Length: 369
Image (cartoon, rainbow, N blue to C red; front, side):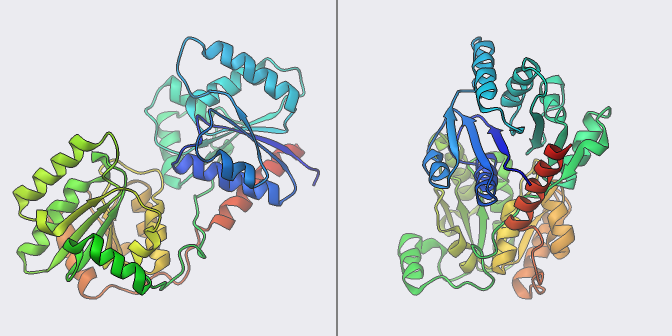
């Protein structure tokens, strides 16, 4: 296969699933000998991207403004200079600018690929994400969503490439070190001594923190000494939301056994010490990476049976899938999983290597057409 030049378009390089997938594919391209270029407004992930052998071009293609047309013309000039084989857009405004920029280039033009990372609001603006010659969907849930809301989409252009994790990063049975556990006990004493429920997720009500608090209260009402760690919910700009959660915890009588903490890098150790990991997003998730991470480490997972989370639980750990909004069923399932969790899946098929390989295969097939 000849050396390809692949350009990925996204708004910025700060943090999040889109950014993570961009860096993961960039690394795979470099490892395979291809030229990897990312165009975005930049951010804290620029350095690791460059350290991995990719190029970065700063262009604010994610800002909605009256200057968007001028930005598109600058993008067109960059693409004319780079002469890529494929332009891969990962977000809506970058996709619109990329699509318009490519239309103004002379033939033969680069191929246009999009990835639908989430279930965007239906309509013409979001519809750009199904305009790629190949449209990558991060789960079967996303594929069904695209076909339901844009029924004129050609199903043959849609390819499901699930996100994946590196099993070496989340190895089965990895213990938290004694030093880590000592620091954990000193930092969060309210979580010590009982059965630990862990809900990792950003500080947004969509993540279902309130349902986790209600579950905690229901468990404790039956005599279960459960504790709850809302890891990642305490973020800058989310102070009012955190105050709401603290007020709810107080009203439910569980404030003293609940910890609401900022995001942290040692989530693997957090999984390792948890007795039960929760995924209670009340809005369907496109995928549900935390389900895979926890199961890979060997921790039982309990979540609402909808969206990408339900898809993963049904295929890998069906006992953890509970009908959306049924608190009684959620409490019963939590009791059962805390008492005697079924064996973990032998393997997790959704690996980083599989995702990288499938994406590069798609690039190479398209470039060969």
